[in-house]
Image 1 (cartoon, helix red, strand yellow):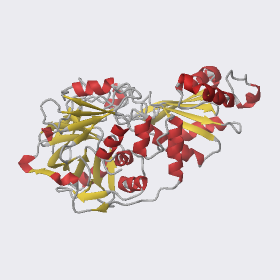
Image 2 (image 1 turned 180 degrees about the vertical axis):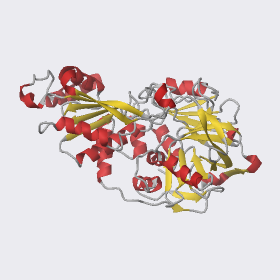
Image 3 (image 1 turned 90 degrees about the vertical axis):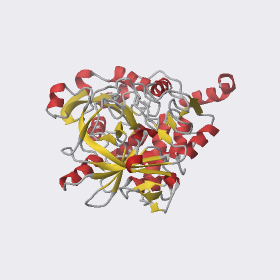
Image 4 (image 1 turned 45 degrees about the vertical axis):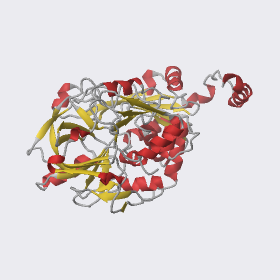
Length: 478
């Protein structure tokens, strides 16, 4: 897939595109996206936005239907069940990551319109105010923030929220410990501003790469090239010189200045947890020096809401579940499934399915999740279930929790674990003292291994017979 437009055309061919004309950027677009964020809803493309000329568009609802997500992830179109996505992505990971570096080209569609100096105006795009209590308009939600490490030269891309403050000033919120946060501080320690390019519309596989939990010194460009099975074509930024996707829709270039030079009040913003937990605070200013965009640009919107799409943020939970599963396989046998609950947002609830093979196997699986880098940042509950439970089916998980877990024996609480500033459960006194720690619960919702063979038999139809029934009566029920 070469760019965002190809993805939109393919979605249209599947009958999964809805074009909406005349909506207001101020709250109305956000409300429509919130309303249409349920599973199975179409891709949304807003045109003729109030106050803007036709062609300046906003796309949303990237991950609300399995067919479109499979399309974007390069998976078979018949992939529909959540655990099928996890298994398919796990199979892709097992092929082994081999970096495919980007290639620089002289020009590309992103250079069709270039603005510098006094011509820069961030308000030229119909950036929505997504939620009523937001502190402003957020142009960066489904975005990629590109930075280069000043020591090693590796290029990093991450998804961070970007708020507009005036025609030439924005802010970029980065949580503690993120790669972007580490890179910008290196520049500030040298007394320099940090060069940054923000991409606000791109090839879906590039965006998927941008939110991976890759190790330091591994570029998301190399990862995206591996996913695409061919290099990403890039052009040099007109101000930063950073590599920019040649087919990007919108790119904002500038510099993040040290906090002692200039700050702006960032937030509040309706966050991925479904709350306004981070509030507002002064953060370093992002001084914009250049803007590029394609003709008839498309702004990618991925605003958080309390109700999440079936596949949150374009499959982030799927990809991380597959990575976590692969990591656990290297430590112990018979892990049969891993899921990160999209209902609970992010990795706050992780479910592990295990075929118990020895005493303590289930507890070992839960402890492995606690120490894994993919789940160490934002996790609250780890639930371990038997292999007859589909970890992505919360009805199954709750049934196991209610019938197989003895609270006195099967729940452990671990304290002083890593948390994050946007955690809605972080007490005010901890937030004020910058104590970003929390507790976690490890819950074994499994049959007790010491008498697993005597555990009562579940009431259910045999899978083989159920398959026969479904095949026989398919035409009646559809």
